[in-house]
Amino acid sequence: MIQLLSHIPPSLKAKIPAIPPATPRNLWLLLTAAVATQNLAAFQSSQDEHITVFAALIWGGALICLEDQLETLDPNPQWPGLIAGAALLSWVIARTSIILHWDGMIFILPLVGCIALALLCEPIKGIGRFRDSLLCLLMLPAFNVVMKLIPDGPLSVLTAHLSGFWLGILGFENIVRNKTVLMPTGGVEVLPACNGVDMIAQVICIAVIFQLAFPLRSFLSRVIVFSLAPVIGLASNTMRIAILALCVANGHGKGSGLFKFFHDDIGSLVFSGIAVFVFGILYMRLLERELPPLPAVFHDQTSHHE
Image (cartoon, rainbow, N blue to C red; front, side, top):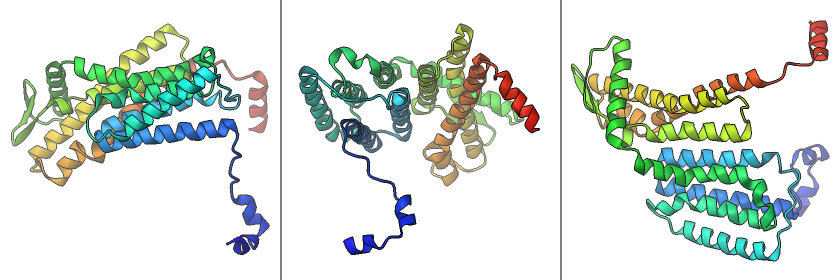
């Protein structure tokens, strides 16, 4: 193997990325990546797709909030923090490894893990630099609490009526009775698992992450963002339910590939992506309004180039 490597052309060697040196900063980042990967693997193996995607968004937001500090990151913990951080992290890793099914503790472990990583990086009084990342990860246990507090019935009824509204706009005859959308040849009932609370939570999560990473200064813009975030999530899910009702009405009921696609598989996640995309466009438009105008020199250079 050594002999083969010695014959690699210099031009090809230049394209092979070098392994980063084992500095305290790089080792801390490697440990952070390992903790996040283990936690997401636990979500993937024990939770449904929407919650797993939600957890991935939370971890991604925590990293985005930390990105500006990566260049100045220089782990230098004190002994009390080092001991406490190592103990907490050992418990998080051990506790995560035994999660095989629904376990409420899985929503708390990322936050505890982030606290442990902060203690392994900074003195106790300096972990405030991780505030935004901790706030992101705090949304996981908050999501679990909200999921239990929001009454399923009213949201399911609202989802059914809005789905019927979309069908009516498209010219499809339908009747909504409580949580059921009925069409002449079939219908669907909106159960708690399909009322869109997870999709609404995802969009609100994105709103919080964007506000932490790319803050809006205008109070009115923040009100618009946090008012429309749940509306966008709800609207996207009701469109999915309307499509499911159309599938059933056209003979593609439960068990068919088309119904399963929009109910259980990638199709469900597609509508989550649409909701996040629409919200992202809204947020960027509001953010652009707060950006200062381009310098006059830049305008002159652009005009000269044209």
